[in-house]
Every structure is written in C-alpha cells, then in structure tokens.
Amino acid sequence: MGRSVEQNFQKRFGDRIEVVYADKPLKGEERRLHSQRLSEAVKAVLTAVLKREPTVEELLGIKPIIPKKKGES
Image (cartoon, rainbow, N blue to C red; front, side, top):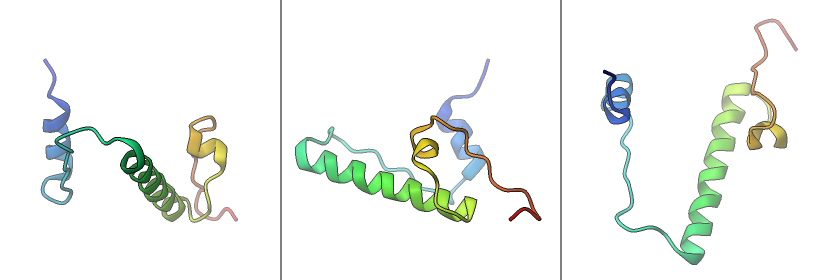
C-alpha cells in the first residue's frame, strides 16, 4: 500500500533535517516554554516565506496562507 510517514519524510528531506522526539512527555513550565518556542519558530518561518507578518487568523488556521504572487505589492 503506502509508505509510512517516516519513510516519506526521509525520502523528501534526507539528512538535511533531523527530528528528535522526547523520551517522556513534557509537563508544566517545560511544556509551556516548548510550545511558546515552537510557535515563535513557526511564525518566523511563515514570515520568511510570506515576506510579511502572518495574521492571527493565518496562524490559527482559520484563513488559508496564500503568498503574494510575483509582481504584487
């Protein structure tokens, strides 16, 4: 049938991206800090891709993320 998620990820990105999973789930302050850092990283990537700050609706998944086409300002 189909490939597993890990196999597809490995095929697509090879050794360029390393994914590390935690041995135990995070709790309390560690979990909050981890979520905050992850949110900041996602926002930074979207800002770089879109060449503008993403809106709250885009970050929450309410509105689709559509980059501007070449020549649009």
